[in-house]
Amino acid sequence: MLAGSLPVLALFAAHQLRRARAGRTPLVRLSVFADRSYSSGVLFVVVFFGLIAGFSLATGMLLQLGLGYTPLHASLAMASWAVGAFAGSAFGSMTMTSLGRRVLHIGLTLMAAGLAGLYWVFETAGTGLGGGHLAAPLLLFGAGIGMIFVPLFDIIVAGIADHEVGSASAALESVQQLGASLGIAVLGTVFFEVMGSPGAGAGHRQDALDAASLVALLTLGLTAVAFLVAFLLPRRSRTT
Image (cartoon, rainbow, N blue to C red; front, top):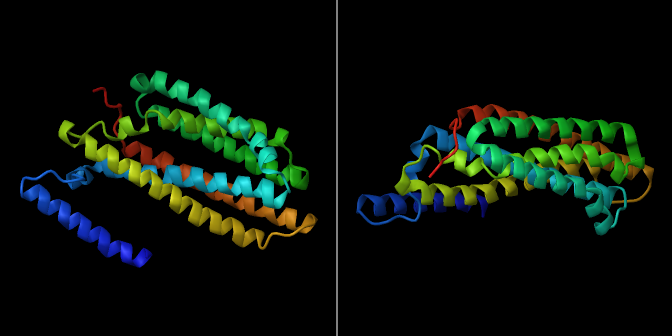
């Protein structure tokens, strides 16, 4: 199916181009991808949502399969992530006009700080890891994510012509899902490869922690990639 998706995508693109040349309305105006800022935004979305989804999976599986938390206990241990995201979203919505893409860099810096803190916690707390250890790093990580969520698409489509905004925004929604799927596939594979088969005992718990630590480092690297890509995005968000 993965191999088959490529020719199907090519056929879809050809069909959309034919409709545009014939003066008919295409489902997606592929001309938006000719804009360098927008194409950079597509890459940013893939990396950003990929790292969020992949790291979220790894952290949840660490707590449940590795440390034996119940789903409810794991959710409570990760609750500060949601609190941080809520606060960050408020900040992002209030400052997106004045800060422009700088709010993305601020958010990514907070995310990196949170990930570094989580890696340190994983390495130092060991199998005695608890929700209290995760609270502060996840709060920072979530706050950074929230700052980016609200203004991101408005920044990416800032340079897109009015008649192409609908296609550009809709394509970003699809790319967001693609990025999340890739993040789960790649980071999830790394996590389960290092952790091995679910089991019991201190050895298995340590394997799960080692897997989560590696995923945290990889996620930190992806955050750095997103930080660099963000320089290619428009400086200001769309105002109309």
